[in-house]
Length: 291
Image 1: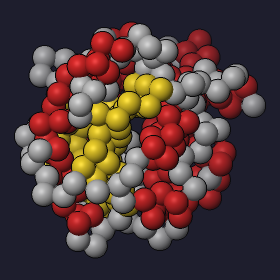
Image 2: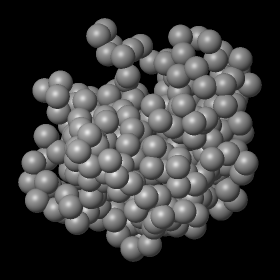
Image 3: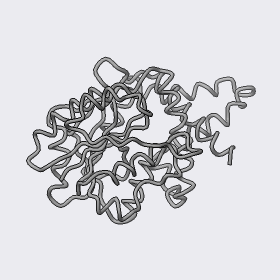
Image 4: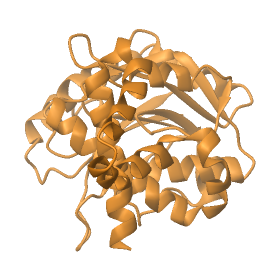
Protein backbone atom coordinates (compact mmCIF):
# COMPACT_ATOMS: atom_id res chain seq x y z
CA UNK A 1 0.00 0.00 0.00
CA UNK A 2 1.03 3.59 -0.70
CA UNK A 3 0.24 6.06 2.10
CA UNK A 4 0.23 9.75 1.19
CA UNK A 5 0.63 11.81 4.38
CA UNK A 6 -0.15 15.53 4.58
CA UNK A 7 0.37 17.55 7.76
CA UNK A 8 -1.61 20.72 8.31
CA UNK A 9 -2.29 23.51 10.76
CA UNK A 10 -4.88 26.12 9.75
CA UNK A 11 -3.92 26.00 6.06
CA UNK A 12 -7.13 26.45 4.08
CA UNK A 13 -5.11 25.58 0.97
CA UNK A 14 -5.23 21.98 2.23
CA UNK A 15 -8.57 21.70 0.41
CA UNK A 16 -6.98 22.13 -3.03
CA UNK A 17 -4.05 19.90 -2.12
CA UNK A 18 -6.34 17.04 -1.15
CA UNK A 19 -8.39 17.42 -4.34
CA UNK A 20 -5.20 17.11 -6.40
CA UNK A 21 -3.76 14.20 -4.40
CA UNK A 22 -7.04 12.25 -4.56
CA UNK A 23 -6.98 12.56 -8.36
CA UNK A 24 -3.36 11.41 -8.51
CA UNK A 25 -4.02 8.40 -6.28
CA UNK A 26 -6.50 7.08 -8.86
CA UNK A 27 -3.59 6.71 -11.30
CA UNK A 28 -1.85 4.17 -9.07
CA UNK A 29 -2.00 0.45 -9.78
CA UNK A 30 -1.24 -0.21 -6.10
CA UNK A 31 -3.75 0.27 -3.27
CA UNK A 32 -3.40 3.65 -1.56
CA UNK A 33 -4.66 5.83 1.26
CA UNK A 34 -4.43 9.53 2.10
CA UNK A 35 -3.75 10.52 5.71
CA UNK A 36 -4.09 14.06 7.05
CA UNK A 37 -2.51 14.93 10.40
CA UNK A 38 -4.30 18.12 11.37
CA UNK A 39 -3.35 20.40 14.26
CA UNK A 40 -6.05 22.97 13.54
CA UNK A 41 -8.25 22.11 16.51
CA UNK A 42 -11.35 21.56 14.36
CA UNK A 43 -11.05 24.80 12.41
CA UNK A 44 -10.70 22.85 9.15
CA UNK A 45 -13.66 20.54 9.76
CA UNK A 46 -15.32 21.76 6.55
CA UNK A 47 -12.30 20.44 4.63
CA UNK A 48 -12.49 17.15 6.49
CA UNK A 49 -16.20 16.81 5.68
CA UNK A 50 -15.61 17.58 2.00
CA UNK A 51 -13.05 14.79 1.63
CA UNK A 52 -14.15 12.32 4.31
CA UNK A 53 -14.89 9.56 1.81
CA UNK A 54 -11.29 9.53 0.53
CA UNK A 55 -9.15 10.74 3.44
CA UNK A 56 -8.17 9.33 6.84
CA UNK A 57 -8.23 12.34 9.18
CA UNK A 58 -6.08 12.26 12.32
CA UNK A 59 -6.64 15.08 14.80
CA UNK A 60 -3.30 16.06 16.31
CA UNK A 61 -2.90 17.38 19.83
CA UNK A 62 0.15 19.60 20.09
CA UNK A 63 2.43 18.52 22.95
CA UNK A 64 2.70 20.88 25.91
CA UNK A 65 5.60 23.32 25.62
CA UNK A 66 6.03 22.74 21.89
CA UNK A 67 5.46 25.74 19.63
CA UNK A 68 6.30 24.17 16.26
CA UNK A 69 5.28 20.52 16.03
CA UNK A 70 6.29 19.61 12.47
CA UNK A 71 8.40 16.52 13.32
CA UNK A 72 5.80 15.37 15.85
CA UNK A 73 3.12 15.54 13.16
CA UNK A 74 5.26 13.71 10.63
CA UNK A 75 5.97 10.88 13.06
CA UNK A 76 2.27 10.74 13.93
CA UNK A 77 1.46 10.52 10.22
CA UNK A 78 3.70 7.51 9.74
CA UNK A 79 2.17 5.83 12.79
CA UNK A 80 -1.32 6.41 11.41
CA UNK A 81 -0.41 5.17 7.93
CA UNK A 82 -0.79 1.55 6.89
CA UNK A 83 1.46 1.59 3.83
CA UNK A 84 4.92 0.19 3.37
CA UNK A 85 5.68 3.20 1.16
CA UNK A 86 5.08 6.63 2.71
CA UNK A 87 4.75 9.79 0.62
CA UNK A 88 4.94 13.26 2.16
CA UNK A 89 3.72 16.50 0.68
CA UNK A 90 2.53 19.69 2.37
CA UNK A 91 -0.77 21.51 2.66
CA UNK A 92 -0.79 24.12 -0.08
CA UNK A 93 1.20 22.03 -2.55
CA UNK A 94 -0.26 21.50 -6.02
CA UNK A 95 1.22 18.39 -7.67
CA UNK A 96 1.72 18.44 -11.40
CA UNK A 97 0.31 15.63 -13.57
CA UNK A 98 2.14 12.35 -13.07
CA UNK A 99 3.78 13.47 -9.82
CA UNK A 100 2.79 10.55 -7.62
CA UNK A 101 3.45 7.77 -10.13
CA UNK A 102 6.89 9.19 -10.93
CA UNK A 103 7.87 9.78 -7.32
CA UNK A 104 7.17 6.26 -6.11
CA UNK A 105 8.50 4.49 -9.24
CA UNK A 106 12.06 4.09 -7.84
CA UNK A 107 10.66 2.64 -4.60
CA UNK A 108 8.69 0.01 -6.50
CA UNK A 109 12.05 -1.19 -7.81
CA UNK A 110 15.03 -1.30 -5.43
CA UNK A 111 15.32 2.21 -3.93
CA UNK A 112 14.38 3.17 -0.37
CA UNK A 113 14.05 6.98 -0.53
CA UNK A 114 13.07 9.28 -3.40
CA UNK A 115 12.71 13.06 -3.54
CA UNK A 116 10.94 15.12 -6.17
CA UNK A 117 11.18 18.74 -7.27
CA UNK A 118 9.37 21.56 -5.44
CA UNK A 119 8.88 24.78 -7.42
CA UNK A 120 6.97 27.99 -6.80
CA UNK A 121 3.42 28.25 -8.06
CA UNK A 122 3.05 30.29 -11.27
CA UNK A 123 2.87 33.97 -10.44
CA UNK A 124 4.51 33.64 -7.02
CA UNK A 125 8.13 34.38 -6.13
CA UNK A 126 10.40 31.58 -7.35
CA UNK A 127 13.35 32.58 -5.20
CA UNK A 128 14.31 28.97 -4.51
CA UNK A 129 13.55 27.45 -7.90
CA UNK A 130 17.04 27.51 -9.40
CA UNK A 131 18.58 26.03 -6.25
CA UNK A 132 15.89 23.34 -6.14
CA UNK A 133 16.63 22.33 -9.74
CA UNK A 134 20.39 22.33 -9.17
CA UNK A 135 20.01 20.17 -6.06
CA UNK A 136 18.41 17.39 -8.11
CA UNK A 137 20.90 17.39 -10.98
CA UNK A 138 22.70 14.39 -9.49
CA UNK A 139 21.03 10.96 -9.47
CA UNK A 140 21.54 10.74 -5.71
CA UNK A 141 21.64 13.55 -3.15
CA UNK A 142 22.60 13.83 0.52
CA UNK A 143 19.85 16.05 1.94
CA UNK A 144 16.31 17.10 1.12
CA UNK A 145 13.13 18.52 2.58
CA UNK A 146 9.92 16.60 3.18
CA UNK A 147 7.72 18.72 0.91
CA UNK A 148 8.04 16.13 -1.88
CA UNK A 149 9.44 12.92 -0.41
CA UNK A 150 8.75 9.19 -0.49
CA UNK A 151 10.42 6.45 1.54
CA UNK A 152 10.02 2.86 2.63
CA UNK A 153 8.84 2.34 6.18
CA UNK A 154 11.86 0.12 6.81
CA UNK A 155 14.20 3.08 6.20
CA UNK A 156 12.11 5.30 8.51
CA UNK A 157 12.22 2.68 11.27
CA UNK A 158 15.95 2.10 10.81
CA UNK A 159 16.79 5.69 11.85
CA UNK A 160 13.99 6.18 14.36
CA UNK A 161 11.91 8.65 12.35
CA UNK A 162 12.09 12.42 12.76
CA UNK A 163 13.92 14.00 15.67
CA UNK A 164 11.22 15.82 17.64
CA UNK A 165 13.81 18.03 19.30
CA UNK A 166 13.91 20.18 16.15
CA UNK A 167 11.34 22.88 15.45
CA UNK A 168 12.74 23.35 11.94
CA UNK A 169 15.44 21.32 10.21
CA UNK A 170 14.15 17.87 11.18
CA UNK A 171 13.85 17.01 7.48
CA UNK A 172 17.56 17.61 6.82
CA UNK A 173 18.50 15.76 10.00
CA UNK A 174 16.34 12.84 8.83
CA UNK A 175 18.08 12.81 5.44
CA UNK A 176 21.55 13.00 7.00
CA UNK A 177 20.82 10.11 9.34
CA UNK A 178 19.50 8.06 6.44
CA UNK A 179 22.66 8.58 4.39
CA UNK A 180 24.84 7.90 7.44
CA UNK A 181 22.96 4.61 7.85
CA UNK A 182 23.89 3.65 4.29
CA UNK A 183 20.69 4.59 2.46
CA UNK A 184 20.70 6.54 -0.80
CA UNK A 185 18.27 9.33 -1.66
CA UNK A 186 17.18 9.05 -5.29
CA UNK A 187 16.37 12.31 -7.05
CA UNK A 188 13.27 12.37 -9.26
CA UNK A 189 13.25 15.83 -10.90
CA UNK A 190 10.23 15.07 -13.08
CA UNK A 191 8.02 14.47 -10.01
CA UNK A 192 6.99 18.09 -9.47
CA UNK A 193 4.87 19.85 -6.88
CA UNK A 194 4.18 23.57 -6.86
CA UNK A 195 4.06 25.57 -3.65
CA UNK A 196 3.34 29.20 -2.83
CA UNK A 197 6.25 30.26 -0.64
CA UNK A 198 4.44 33.38 0.53
CA UNK A 199 5.34 37.04 0.40
CA UNK A 200 8.63 38.81 0.99
CA UNK A 201 8.25 39.04 4.77
CA UNK A 202 7.32 35.39 5.12
CA UNK A 203 10.30 34.33 3.07
CA UNK A 204 12.68 36.39 5.21
CA UNK A 205 11.24 34.82 8.34
CA UNK A 206 11.65 31.37 6.80
CA UNK A 207 15.29 32.05 5.92
CA UNK A 208 15.99 33.26 9.46
CA UNK A 209 14.55 30.16 11.16
CA UNK A 210 16.25 27.90 8.60
CA UNK A 211 19.54 29.57 9.51
CA UNK A 212 18.92 28.86 13.18
CA UNK A 213 18.05 25.28 12.30
CA UNK A 214 21.24 24.85 10.28
CA UNK A 215 23.35 25.85 13.28
CA UNK A 216 21.53 23.24 15.38
CA UNK A 217 22.05 20.64 12.68
CA UNK A 218 25.81 21.12 12.71
CA UNK A 219 25.79 20.99 16.50
CA UNK A 220 24.17 17.57 16.28
CA UNK A 221 26.35 16.45 13.34
CA UNK A 222 29.74 18.12 14.03
CA UNK A 223 31.65 15.86 11.63
CA UNK A 224 29.86 17.52 8.72
CA UNK A 225 31.52 20.84 9.55
CA UNK A 226 34.70 19.54 7.91
CA UNK A 227 33.03 19.80 4.51
CA UNK A 228 30.86 22.85 5.09
CA UNK A 229 32.84 25.26 2.89
CA UNK A 230 32.61 22.89 -0.06
CA UNK A 231 29.02 21.73 0.46
CA UNK A 232 27.29 24.79 1.91
CA UNK A 233 29.52 27.91 1.97
CA UNK A 234 26.51 30.12 2.84
CA UNK A 235 26.73 28.75 6.38
CA UNK A 236 30.12 30.45 6.82
CA UNK A 237 30.18 33.34 4.36
CA UNK A 238 27.10 35.30 5.43
CA UNK A 239 27.56 35.04 9.21
CA UNK A 240 31.21 36.09 8.69
CA UNK A 241 30.10 39.06 6.59
CA UNK A 242 27.64 40.18 9.26
CA UNK A 243 30.29 39.88 11.97
CA UNK A 244 32.59 42.01 9.85
CA UNK A 245 30.14 44.90 9.37
CA UNK A 246 31.93 47.09 11.96
CA UNK A 247 34.82 47.17 9.46
CA UNK A 248 32.68 49.59 7.47
CA UNK A 249 33.88 52.37 9.79
CA UNK A 250 37.45 51.93 8.53
CA UNK A 251 36.71 50.28 5.18
CA UNK A 252 33.70 52.16 3.75
CA UNK A 253 33.54 49.87 0.73
CA UNK A 254 33.19 46.68 2.81
CA UNK A 255 29.43 46.33 2.05
CA UNK A 256 30.30 46.34 -1.64
CA UNK A 257 31.33 42.70 -1.18
CA UNK A 258 27.64 41.91 -1.52
CA UNK A 259 27.88 42.85 -5.19
CA UNK A 260 29.57 39.48 -5.78
CA UNK A 261 26.58 37.30 -4.81
CA UNK A 262 24.24 39.89 -6.32
CA UNK A 263 25.99 39.48 -9.69
CA UNK A 264 25.99 35.69 -9.44
CA UNK A 265 22.25 35.72 -8.79
CA UNK A 266 21.41 38.51 -11.21
CA UNK A 267 18.80 36.41 -13.00
CA UNK A 268 16.95 35.48 -9.79
CA UNK A 269 16.29 38.90 -8.31
CA UNK A 270 19.71 39.81 -6.88
CA UNK A 271 18.48 42.08 -4.08
CA UNK A 272 15.98 39.50 -2.86
CA UNK A 273 18.55 36.71 -2.93
CA UNK A 274 21.17 38.70 -1.03
CA UNK A 275 18.73 39.88 1.64
CA UNK A 276 17.40 36.33 1.95
CA UNK A 277 20.92 35.00 2.50
CA UNK A 278 21.71 37.72 5.03
CA UNK A 279 18.59 36.73 6.97
CA UNK A 280 19.81 33.13 6.87
CA UNK A 281 23.21 34.20 8.19
CA UNK A 282 21.55 36.25 10.94
CA UNK A 283 19.66 33.15 12.02
CA UNK A 284 22.89 31.17 12.28
CA UNK A 285 24.49 33.90 14.40
CA UNK A 286 21.42 34.19 16.62
CA UNK A 287 21.50 30.47 17.36
CA UNK A 288 25.25 30.48 18.06
CA UNK A 289 24.98 33.47 20.39
CA UNK A 290 21.98 31.96 22.20
CA UNK A 291 24.06 28.90 22.99
